[in-house]
Image 1: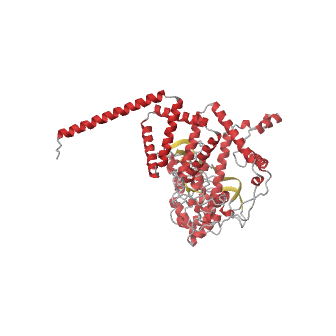
Image 2: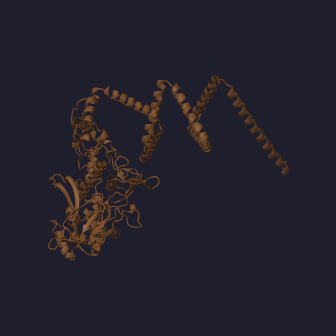
Image 3: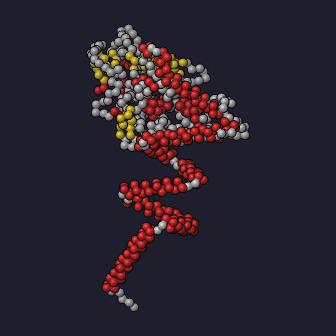
Length: 612
């Protein structure tokens, strides 16, 4: 029986340390010897050594099980990640440069068949990866690709840019040449096969509205663009407040009273609108429930009070002292409206609409008829942030005398006056004055001071939000949120047409004010006209619409040239096919709100027929 003492343990520990030191020295010596041998070896010796190593590695990997292979790959990744985390920026740059050099040498030496098989394998791998990725991953990848392409193009020299553009032109030429070599059956416009079930085609099956925007949670179809709802996170607006009772119940369409209200919702809105709606309205026929207008849309407002002996109109109705007389006047505006519904809405707007309360307070502060009420187009309440989009408060209303200077877009209302004021489309109260049922609290609408947001930092950018982006955000369907605008049926149709006219007006204004940026002086047709006429004094100030403006002459000319190009490449078309949306499609009925039919939601039927 042996008995170990403390001295024996110390002796054994010292022996282990000596053995480890000897082993470490041996490893260091082996590494140094290996370095010297590799430095002295000839290129042929190096190639044979690396080839033998590759063969040995292949045999080892062929013999290992799947579990061992997975463990080995995981260990390699861990080792590589640790090594890369510890390297300095200079080492990282050297490594990346060496990788690029090695890759370039390998690609320069490969045969055309090897290059083709490598690219084909890469494409297949990319296809599989993209099929498996989630919608959010796809959007992140596309955004990263765009940023990478922007940086790369910003850093390239003029020579590199010319080389890239020349390569793109050559690639397009090859692609078009390959298309022209397709067989005649491929070039036919349409070849119908009665055996095929075309309802199962990918072109028809657009799927459900399951695509969710990662920024604003808007629901979209798979084929819809990423930024159509919120410009990829750059537009952030607060929700419109839910309407109080009884308006909330009226918009549901579940009760008999609410159904009668929704069937005449435009008439009820006209009973309470504060501005007149000016446009040439086309009466829809009995088969098409569509709101159509011709020409320009404009809203006008009169004075707060009528002259003696005249009837109250629009905004003036809110200043009738007797509520019963006010109710009688409102019921006389539109026929077939129910007095009980009008009475309930009248009470709601007097109690909850900030614009009505603002005007009532302001009129009491006007000492004479020569004073005016001025509502600034872009003013922000004192101490408040512009992105809160508050409804106007009495602090924002100025009571001024005649002769004061105003901005062109300000709303200037007289106490008594025979003139009508046109409300600017970009005034923040434009929507609430015309659509009190939608904006029951008088909330602000679109105006120029709404800024885009940086989605990464959640801070305001210098760029302003356009009317198109604003109303695209407002009209989207979002998960777990109620959009009360979509419940307004015929009034929703009028609102969409009105706001689209506003968007087009803003586009035209931008084109008119930015002719130099659009380089309109370079347009060949205008230059030829000036040269041929010879008299430039008769030209006047022209506004040239670019081809990007839908419906402009240059836009139509561009489409005509595209059509000619298609005919030249594919031959004359065999059939001209139009496609009509079926309102009974399941994908339409699934998106309708309670009590709605397809005629109430042109936003869905337009998308469905466009996608199909």
